[in-house]
Amino acid sequence: MNIHVVKPGETLMSIAQQYGTTPQRIITDNNFADPNMLTVGQALLILTPDVVHIAKPGDTLGGISVMYNTTILSLLQNNPHLATSPILYAGEPVVVSFSDEKRRSITVNGYAYPYIHRDVLLNSLPYLTTLTIFGYGFDEEGNLIGGIDDQPLINMALEFQTAPIMLLSSVSEKGTFSTELASKLFNDYDMQNKLIEQIIATMKQKKYRGLDVDFEYVRPEDRDAYVQFLENITEKLNAQGFSVNVDLAPKTSADQEGLLYQGHDYAALGDIANTALLMTYEWGYMFGPPIAVAPLNSVRQVVDYGLTEIPADKILLGIPNYGYDWALPFIRGTTAAVPLGNEEALALAQSVGAEIQFDELAQSPFFRYYDDDGKEHVVWFEDARSILGKLNLLSEKQLKGAGYWNLMRPFTQNWLLLNALYDIEKIPITQLSQ
Image 1: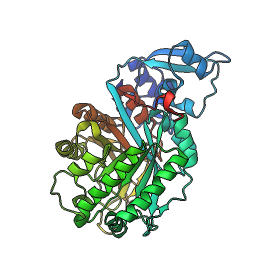
Image 2: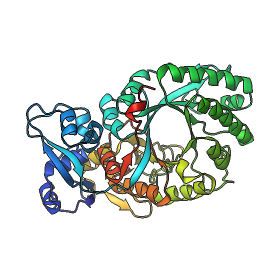
Image 3: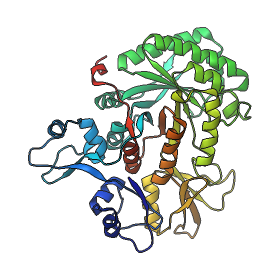
Image 4: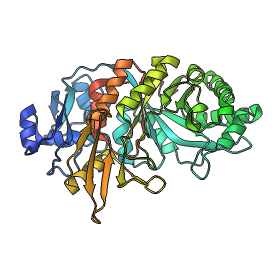
C-alpha cells in the first residue's frame, strides 16, 4: 500500500507505471469525480493486489468466494464498487486479496441518518462492525420519541453482519441539545426507568444490538447525575444482552472548563459503558475559524488524556468524514462555513484548478481558491494521508477501534485504506438470527 502525492506534470498513466498498476485501478480505488483531471498535491491511494480473479461469463461473488476459500464479504471489502453493482461482466477483475499484511482486528462504527443514500450506505457497510442510526429522543414524561424510518437501515446492516445500534440523545425538535431536558432525566429515577423500558422494547422489536448514549452540553451540576443515569441504563441493557456506548467530548484534562466538557466525567462514564467514543473532531467547525476539522496534534492530546482515565480496549477514536469551505476573511459571528464531503472537496479543487497543500502539524490537507465573485475561500478536508495518521494512532495506542462521524458522504479512499490496514470485526454468521 502506498500513498502518492501528485506532482506537476504527472499523469494517471505515469503514476500507474511507477507502481506497476493500471490507471483504471487507481480511478476505482480513489473514486475520481473526473478521471481526466489530476490535482497537484492530491493524495492517491495505491493498492497492490496479490490475487486477482478475471470474471468469466456466469461468475458470481458466491462462486468466486468458494473457488478461493474466502467470503463474499471479503470480496466486497476488496472491491467496494461491487456492493452496488454485484453483477459481474466477463473480463472484470475482482481482487481476491492484497499483498499487504493487516495489523490486527478492530471495531469500526459509523453514524448515519435514516435518509442516507442507499448506495453510500452499501459502500460503507462491508467495513463496519456497528451502524449507529441517529436517532431517538424523549419527552418530559420519559416517553421515547422516534418516528424515524430506521428499519430499512437495520435490515441492511444485518445483511452485512453489521450490528445496528440505536442512538439516544437529548436533541430537541429545534435540532440542538437540550440541557434542561437532559437534567430532568438525570434527576428523575422513575422517568429514567419508564424511558429505559420503552428503549428495550423498541430494541427488541426492531432487532437493535446496542445503544449509543449521546448527551452533549451537560450542566456541570449534573455531572454526577449523568453518571448515575448511565449506570442505570447500562445495567438494565447489559442484562438484556445489549451493549452501551457513551459519546465523550474531546477533553484534554479532567478539569477542562466549558459547558461541552465539564459534565463529562471520563473516568466514571468510561468505567460504566461497554465502549466510549472520543469525539475527536470539530476543531474546525461551521461557525469557527478556518482550521483542520481534526488536527492530529489535537486528536493525540485527547487520546493521551483519555488513556489516563479509560482502558484502551474500550476507546473508539472519532474520525470525521467531511470538511468545510470558509469564505475569507473569517469574521466571527458572521462567517458560516459550508460543509462538504471529502470527495466533493477534491472535485472542487479540480474544478477551480487549486493546488492542494498539506499542514504537517495538523496532518490535514487544505487548499485556497477564488469564487466567481472574486472572493477568497479556504477548504480543509480529509484525505488518505490525514486518515492514515489517525489510523496509525489506533495501532500506536492500541485502541479498540474507530467511529466515523458520519457516513452520509462517500469516501472510497478511506474504506480501502482502512481495509488494507485492519481486519474489521463482524457479527458471526451464527449469531445473526439471535
